Image (tube, rainbow, N blue to C red; front, side):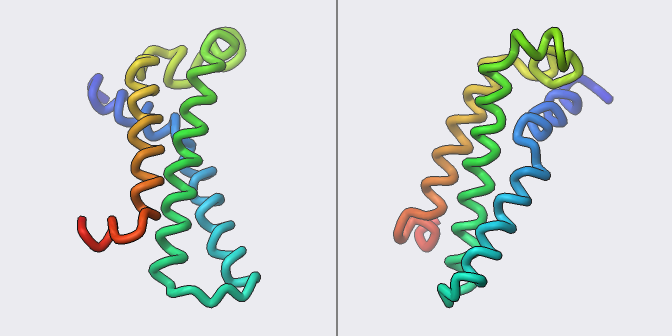
Length: 111
């Protein structure tokens, strides 16, 4: 795998996609179990927003833990050098902004 491919894979791993899917699924289950009866698109947008913000939190956690991970988890993207701390912070910002915009009234309709 070339360097760009490894970097892209590292960025995906930073978000911890399984955790993001579990979070999105939890939003859907909560909406259904709570009898909210919202429009499916609204529930889907809330699930997507939760997944995006979860990915941001996961990446930010790895930025904060980089020194510990150099010792305990050296295969993770940041200590392994697959993703720079700056790229991870940019990723965090993009995911948070995306997560907020997904739920902003009227934004989805205008995009």
